[in-house]
Length: 372
Image (tube, rainbow, N blue to C red; front, side, top):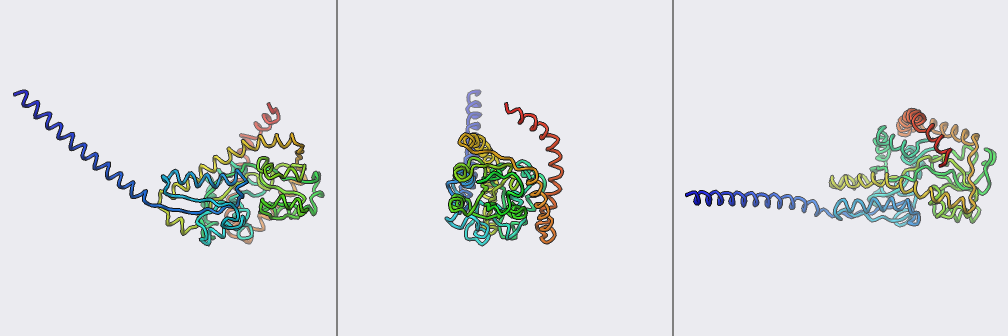
């Protein structure tokens, strides 16, 4: 009797286990089916960039985004990057993306000052933020919405998507000792930095970076700024000019932009939109780490090879700062978009500068001076 009851219990248990297992299989099948349906969305995009594939840190920022998106979507959302000129010229990426000639692009807002000076804030402007301050303003100070609104006027969605860190002041064939030494100097310097440079006497020329060496060779320029020690060395700028001036007042924390055609963006599945945003954010962090690490080593090589570091005199920095803020006020008085972004930038700048003077500057002054 007991044996019969035991067999019945075991049979019921086995049946219950089988039922549960079947339910689990059905649930798993449903999950797999749902995933499979999502994974069937195959999308292929192209990315136009402003960079030669020889400019390692810049082009790697673009390719990093593409690679990460593909991994995050299990290979179903593929973006192919193209160097400058592959789809559009280096300084025409905004047009190509906005007009739908290409789905997305990797570039910098400073190239499009003639279209909207407000876009420069996405990259860097003279006497503005260092990289950490810029990110604090964009992600913590409400600037992301303002910049996206400014870019939306050109039918593009904007993401911060990489940084070179603080830049240097540029390469000069003659040592600059005073403001007078800048008068009539032919210098490659784009964006609002170039507009300010004109106001202090420089003949500012906006050239794609790939054309800088030839411009030096042909005597079209006497000076040029590009990025920082690592990429400047790779481009060979130290072969054309000996004096490496600092600080990079014109771009104290340079940022890249990921621009996405708005129509293409709206058609993306939500998880693919999320993947693109994550990839851009990760690239923002990783590119700064990479650039800072490479620049520390490259500067030592440059100095060992004969490059001479020269600090800009205070009168030059003072004149450039005055000219910069005169330009900002002029732009704000006639451009509503610029005014909105500038007002936010100026207010944030005042408080973040005060905070960083308290929490960082005194420490930096002490430990940097010790150098060991």
